[in-house]
Length: 145
Ligand SMILES: [Zn+2]
Image (tube, helix red, strand yellow):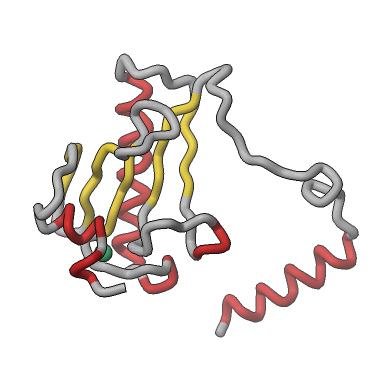
């Protein structure tokens, strides 16, 4: 996707409006236009990359530190917030809709009705140790590549 048509690049370039909470040389933090719950925030690196793997690691660390600070700010605020979710949708199969990497931070409260949908017959079935060990071994190797 060309950057000119990227919603987040347009927000960063002040071509679209946003409610900005924080901005520095690496990231911008805005209020989500379509929140899971009120207080839903997006932490967006200023450099356009669609995939998480392409994001500068210092920028990612900075984004996570800001997520912690935003978590604290949400809990101090008057916005209903009994808990906080962090969420990244990396790729279309993971639910990514805007292909400029971003980290969601959103408040949760008892009875908010939000949650992951899943099929008990397919998901959260207890794994076999032999398969878990195979997965661990493969990913250990990939980590070193
Ligand atoms: Zn962008």
